[in-house]
Image 1 (cartoon, rainbow, N blue to C red):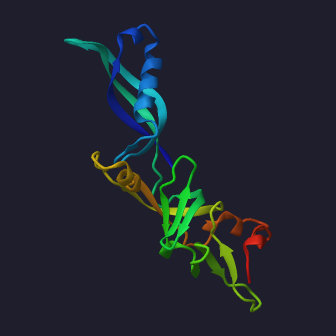
Image 2 (cartoon, one colour):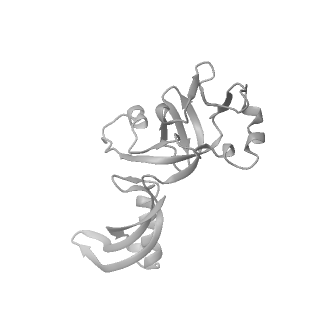
Length: 208
């Protein structure tokens, strides 16, 4: 789910910062620049892992700042395709489910990738798995409602370069990084379905 990515950048240090510990200043600036930012085709940057190389400080004419070339490694969130991850359902619509792993909420499970057979309740805007019970009993409704912890398989990481001239409303609709997943296999879906005593945990959500 997380990878270490080697990166290079030029860090500018203000004159009054040159007297401070150089590594601490560089660490602070790199985290401020990259943390919680999406880099296209790389992933969501979390935090600096370490500094590999700090170059010499050089000055430019008419600029009092010190400029330093640095090589470093950043912890990046970018799940592997086929990786199985646990997340929480935060929204449901006819198109599918939106999931969250606390620090990242652009995870989408399309309707066709939900456990089959699945049914969407228009009034409640909820999906449920129509689980076939034994002993000729009617199918049970196992809901995938917001708040449930689910397990899914990563199908695709989608990156999109967002235009900087978009309005705030348009920018909110765009997603620079989105994960597409699937729950169509045995063992995926609500984690309580597959744990010991899971049936008891689902009693309140099951309707026959």
